Amino acid sequence: MNRPVQRVIIIVLALLLVVPLGVMGLGGVLGSGGEDQAGTDPTVENPENRPTVDPAQQPPRPELPRPEEPAGLTTQSAEGAQATLRYLLSSYDFMMSSGDTSVWEDSVDPNCSVCMSFLDNAQMLADQGGYLVGGAFEVHSTTFSGTGEPPATGTVVAQFSQAESILVDDPSLQASRLSSVTGQLIATVAWDGERWRVTDMTIAPPEGAASDGGGASDAGGAGGAGGAAG
Image 1 (cartoon, rainbow, N blue to C red):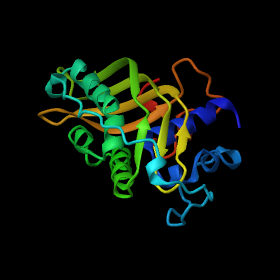
Image 2 (cartoon, rainbow, N blue to C red; image 1 turned 90 degrees about the vertical axis):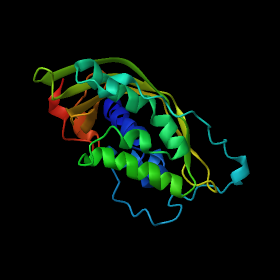
Image 3 (tube, helix red, strand yellow; image 1 turned 60 degrees about the vertical axis):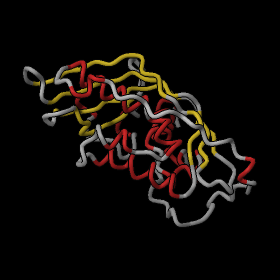
């Protein structure tokens, strides 16, 4: 499997954090042909036969503060739309370590299936006593293209990097290490009358990187907005 496709799939694992995939580990995700294996039965316990560990020996759960909400989220402008996506990414490690999904719930559209996957998987991880250590995002730049004046809908493209992390999906099993990654997150957004909400998201390789046939179409279930920005 070529490297660009592999990087996109790893980004999907790290960003969407589908817990059954975390249980499988990267070996399962990057299996034959690099195909997304999300259909594997998540009820099968420890499919990789990972070593059991004493939960007390796991890396401790981070105690991160809840990020403060920037004022731009309630401003109907290009700056407000970009602030919304930056806020979601900056709060990702807090959500995945604490299980507190309220930050995301306030800034995503309930009809956004990808967004709901983020929330469902964060809740699932918390319910089974799991958490993420590390994995903080750094947003290097954002751009916005919208319709209307002031804009009512649009697309935000964020160039980001994510720090390496450790996924403790089951405290009694060996944790999984996730590599640091870089890429683009493309989000469609809409003004709901009070604030910006993300209506869809997809992931692409870093700006300027060759896809070698990979591209955003390899980003698992995160498709739908891939053609919104280049």
